[in-house]
Image (cartoon, rainbow over all chains, first blue to last red; front, side, top):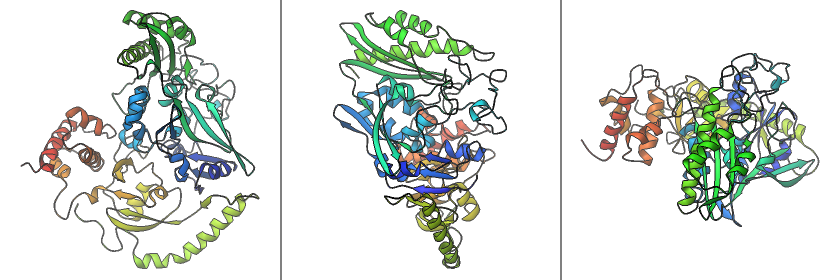
Length: 335
Length: 208
């Protein structure tokens, strides 16, 4: 690993100012960054350690009808939080399903959202792939078993974050601080507006630029008979990235679906909001048959590549399971 | 296993520390340079370090001082500078669990943890589990149930099991599987490890 200057900011404002330095990387736990640095895929001159910024460690709490937590809250803290388990069990499930106990004990919420994709061509420094500034996406002609089946045009990564789809389903917000010279300003970004598609900018996956830090993450506490869920499929029972994943929230009223939010992940470069499926669900009574049909609808427009058509079936499966789990939780008293 | 830290072995010795004081002064001027380079007008920039930097942390209960560059992982520090080779390096990418240690009582992959991030924290390695000659219940369970073959995953596996047992004195088989889901055994000794955990649970409760 190349040596670097290690910045130890005391708060997000200091971190944001330091993060404006050229060739600088932000580090939460470092479970992704240290891996990339060892592989030589990322070679920063400066690393800003966000774990010393005390305001990124603000506790999980209820505040004005929202659940708020510091960006450096660990996945284990989310998974073990009685508050999150009560109001949004889908969010707790997504954190609990991620990686391994060791990674969850370190990995942070903001880091999980901002981790780089797992594409093996991107992760291998001998491939000058288009995401790394080269001219070729090697997955188009190459090994693409784990790549995208939707929006796979110029770069076929899949979004790797477990928390991204559920946080988007819950209408989450990222509280970002931005350094502008020595001034630091705070702004809010809706999770759904956070992602950048390869066609917009192939070099990154979200809108953060140099000098910006995610200080806190929040979402509104679901109201009424609402249930949330997160479901993924994997090759291994644990310790693996998802092949397909789906987060869902359903609000029921009078035995019918009053509102639905469904987001797919692990199948496209960004989390995918299934607006057509959501509209189709509203006004209907939840049932296994309905959710099975929704799962099939969710695969409309898929463009699988040589080795990943199996993801179509697994997409239908996660959508059906996520909707069933959300409906069960909604009827179980509203969660 | 047993006690680990003879003077000047488990931690930086007094003599080694004094010898390195000159390097520390040089490092300080490097830090000043780094700060200056980043300094805009206005508020003071964040603290920054570069090159060999002194850190202090507790290693198996013992105050430890070490000098590390920011790019050094805790695993490298343990094995290569502190001569604590119980913790194993296998994949070096957080994908196998052989390097598992406890950081403030929770399991972490020491291969992905920058040593500087252990500053002020409690680190426990497999060398720190036994009390004198008395093995930790998990270690005793592993011995009695033959829960290893080649043994290379064992230190990490033992650390995951010990953390689980501390949190959950009588884990079910499913909870054990979840507890060691970040550790891979290529010899496939998982069933013996589950039995070792049952034994450890009984031993910890004072059973025979």
